[in-house]
Image (cartoon, rainbow, N blue to C red):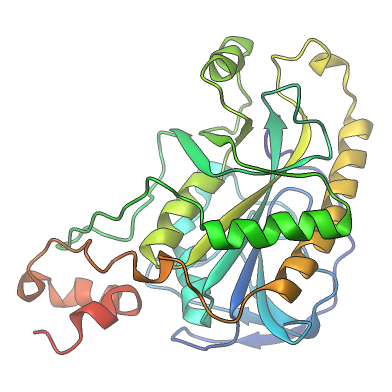
Length: 313
């Protein structure tokens, strides 16, 4: 099963604020909440920031606040109330919005189905690879007169993954580092034949959302990691059909509680600076002659390309 949609989590009361965009420097760490995690308990000095981006509207307002003195922005991936299908998500707006807020690292929480017996419900998997089975997704900021090819052989920031792994250990959650997240189109779940093929290919977990986030985060030079919360086994498992909705909701609730603990510990332990290569992912990726980039595209991508196009006409 991937991205189960029905769960009620106690929400926070937020003070409302709005902004039309731009670099706000209101957060350094971003958290994306998936199925079952629609708010971020534990945030202090909370306010909402509604953004416009060059790519349209994000899924919801960004809930900004602090954890252990670190500035954090939380976004409910599917919107609060779970209103947006995986294929309807405006991935570009969501990631660009984090960039506008000043975020440098993103922790993405996702409910997933398990493709291996060893990954049990309530386990967290911190995948280091993705496999694409989507068909209808926009997953690049580029085009419109500018071509860039980022390196994506290792799609997850190793530094950030290490911090999350340590956080899982510290709070007593099973956090398995490594493995492959298969990103399917949805919204329907897999057929049994598909599920068995994915298992034969050696995939670990299955979900509907995280690959596009990872690609766009890399293009935006943001560190990115997925925390894949196992909800149940995908339909390959002989006992899959015997799992009740009540059981799944109970797992979602427990996963959400564990995810909150892991995020808090991750934020508290986060290094102040970045020593990974994520911050310079575009350094050698832009192939287009800078003088040939259309003014409208240059303007649209200013936040992403600005430091590389500086003083170039």
